[in-house]
Length: 270
Image 1 (cartoon, rainbow, N blue to C red):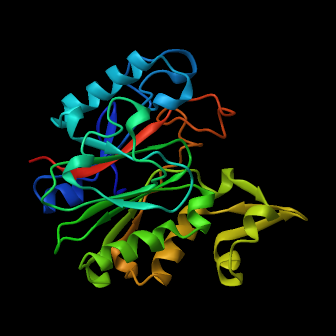
Image 2: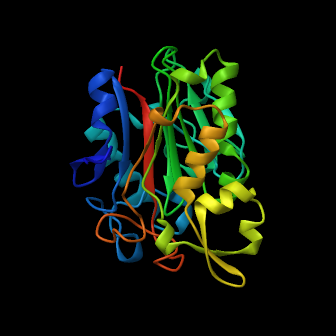
Image 3: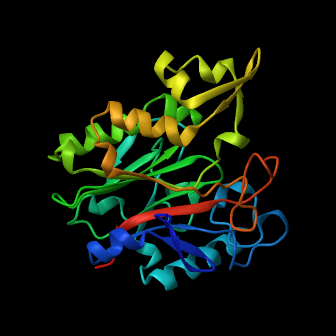
């Protein structure tokens, strides 16, 4: 079965199905290829905060900006602190975090954009889970950064509730769980597992020793989305793994912390 993410350029994948069905919508995830960064950040590092040369990061972002035909000044990013704060983007926020980390929206890991705001929501990843949200009725779009802390903190639920508060019906909300670390490569201890319910543990973990478990972050986010009222048929999950697919992606765990970041994006090209 074809993956929801289709590679469009060496530098990024896009969600062809959504973009074809809803003209003007842009949804995707970058690779680590096609940029100007060197060494451990080679080559399309999108993160300003990882000690890469900032001029290279800016150039890398311009590469994607040109390919998507969306000006950097229309990008908006959260600070990403592994929490569950969600921001509704207003016109005054557009451009925040686009060309420096210093102006990103403070304390924010989830972004929602209404259809009347011309912006591209962007978020950084290197094993954490990108969650993409779209309501084809209200035309609201969103993206969330869900590492293990954000996942067990229920940022997926926070995003769903934010959509509902803005007028969405849960039955209309579509979600994609994007490229992130796979269960085979994500071993954690009880400090993480203790935050899961018994049902979630049964579905999403495999115990490998007294204090060590394999955790399926993608499946855990799907389970939380189902608990939050999203219909199963409205949730798509990619098979791409940031750890395993080494030629495509940076991985914080595989690369022992010294690595670049990919960028997830969603918004309108209007």
